[in-house]
Image (tube, rainbow, N blue to C red; front, side, top):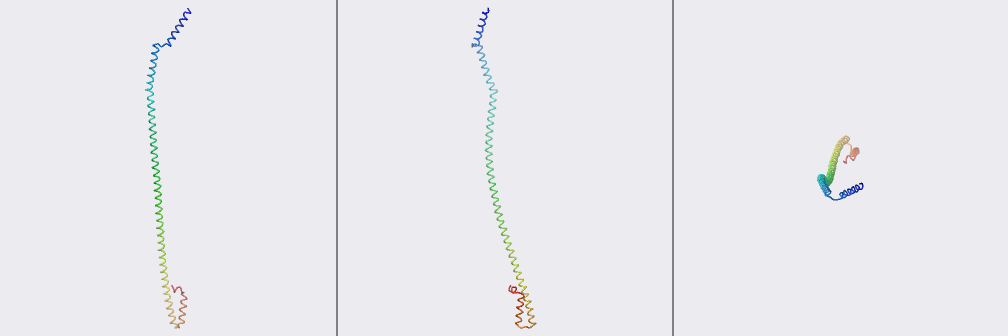
Length: 187
């Protein structure tokens, strides 16, 4: 009996083994259902997981591209503004130089006018001083003439009083002239 059982057991195992590797309808149905489940799972995962992730990545890619374009535009605007400000600074420097140059010209013109006015004033002062000196000279000459007339009348009185001769009178005149000085008489 033992051998019969062993034989039956071996056969049963062989039958099961053959069935395990054998393509029967149950195995094919299970495989087909598994494949359909994997495909359905793949599409579901793709639809619910991969599509939103792809959409998020696409949106992010578009946002980054937009940010890059905006940054480029901002950079171009900044460069344009920089060039504009640099040109304005150059114009301001030129205007400042022109204003300084004009101020220097005005200062030089004012300086020459002030110098000219000072020279004219100095000339007027010198002319006035010369006129006053001339008047003082004339006044001194008039006083000397008056003094000479006074001295002459005194001499005439002495001459008449002394009844002196012409020699004595000439000596008195020479003496009087020496007292007054020749420069006073000649001026």
